[in-house]
Image 1 (cartoon, protein in one colour):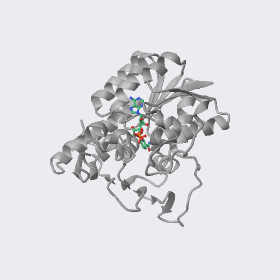
Image 2 (cartoon, helix red, strand yellow; image 1 turned 90 degrees about the vertical axis):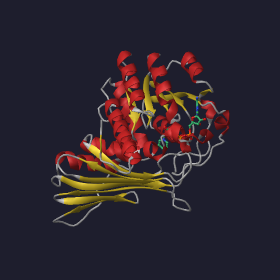
Image 3 (cartoon, rainbow, N blue to C red; image 1 turned 120 degrees about the vertical axis):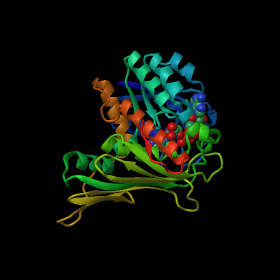
Image 4 (cartoon, protein in one colour; image 1 turned 120 degrees about the horizontal axis):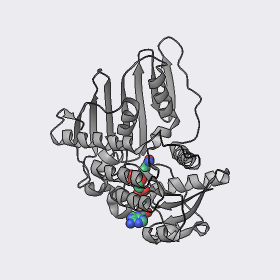
Amino acid sequence: MIKTGLIGIGFMGRGHLDNYIRLESEGFPVKLVAVCDIDPNKFENKFLPGNIDVGNQKYDFSKYRLYTDIEEMLNKEELDYVDICLPTYLHAEATIKALNRGLNVLCEKPMALNSRECSEMIEAAKRNNRKLMIAHCLRFWPAYEYLKECVETKRFGEFLGGYFYRGGSPPRWSYKNWLLTREKSGGCMLDQHVHDVDTINWLFGKPRAVSTIARNVIPGSGYDLLSTNYIYPNGKVINAQDDWTLQGDYGFEMLFRANFEGGNLVFQNNILKVNPNDAKGFIPELSKDIGYYREIKYFVDCLSSNKPVTVAPPESSKETIEIVEAEVRSADKDGEITPVL
Ligand SMILES: NC(=O)c1ccc[n+]([C@@H]2O[C@H](COP(=O)([O-])OP(=O)(O)OC[C@H]3O[C@@H](n4cnc5c(N)ncnc54)[C@H](O)[C@@H]3O)[C@@H](O)[C@H]2O)c1
């Protein structure tokens, strides 16, 4: 049995908690034994709603040993890994602390605030010979896995171009409003858009350069409405857009359109449609499980069978941050074509 401690029980922490409850009920060999959050109100089920439907509203926290201090949890518990769902500005510090205690770490995206912190996290994992995975859930999301498979197998020929989008209402639920504070979250550019950046990096590797037009709408929150073109040597036409300033009843949306020589894929309203050039379009049979469930299962599986983390290795997550850094530099210069370092 793999034993874990969950750190941060805010919006995403609850998403993970739901999946630990489900995995345990399914007899999967992972057991959540401890939960840590600096805000004890969370243990009384006092939460603010997020912009997507993750996490139940009420939990029985008496099943877990509860902590308000990370250090204390690490001192008292014997864990195989920690699952870090803390604000981004704490990812590097908490990850390195846990790795130095000999624990493995599953840490939420984005990996960290900048690529320097990412390097320190990778070095700590190597030094301690422990596994580190950043929970880039789209790498485990069935529709995105299907896209990845089409790119790799060339089922519909070469990939020609595509569009990736995410958008939603401003994230107003976070601890001390860290999400809408640029220095703590990196804004929409690093927090929400990073999902599509990571998908593009996963599918095609690092682009040579990027050109980003972006603006700030919510004061102090950094770039929160943006559009990026990704420049690859072979002329693929790829654009991603993000906007977390959509108000009213907008809610949240993620989609993509991918065009191949022999057909196209469209993911919208949570449905993937495949349109081959020379046959009737169809909706493929995909797993109904979402990425949050599948990523935890995968990481636990890597630990229990001592397999390397190949789907979302930390080196690749660091590259994703390097791409975002280039996007910020480009946006600062009104979309100047900017090399990815
Ligand atoms: N994969 C996804 O789709 C997805 C979606 C949302 C958020 N996230 C990521 O999850 C992480 C958390 O985001 P969130 O929206 O849950 O934020 P949040 O503010 O709702 O939750 C953060 C939690 O951490 C706790 N916390 C803060 N400082 C702490 C400390 N020093 N020690 C212990 N607990 C502390 C807070 O009390 C809060 O409960 C971020 O990295 C975010 O980017 C991922």
